[in-house]
Image (cartoon, rainbow, N blue to C red):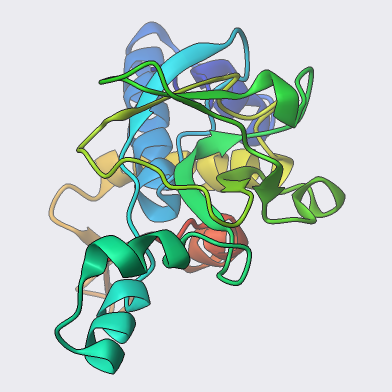
Length: 226
């Protein structure tokens, strides 16, 4: 996966510097490390949205949907109750997927199929519902209420154009700021910046630059674990 930034971007960010051959190597590694740090901090890859590709996902039922009915009805014949659960009276079925935008594609272009059968499923909406208006990616596919998706691990094949139209400027700036910190880190190999003898020494903490963390806070994707 390509880095979010290159050493030439860092040269410009640092005031139009021209790195020497050895500095190019160090700066390139700093850019790679910063790109990885940004992706780790946001749980996103910010990859380019190009051609449609197949990816595989696992459907997770909303926590409590069936345990509620089980606790309420007790010991019953589920062959009778199950059909009633998949009706328009219950919430729509939602599948978590990777980031994608409705750019050069529509919901109708996204196909969902069962890898163990010939069944196909048609999403009706994407979530967040107002993603396009806020510049955020879509992260879920919404199906009409009553749609039953198979529960096998990786059983759902989704074909779509994944990724982002472009890396957000705030994310690029965060990567450059973190890369500049990594680049200068070579001058403090023991994790101490400044002059300890003169009382101006400062220990560098093993964490993202605070400004970088703030810039990335709105872009972070949260994954729920049940």
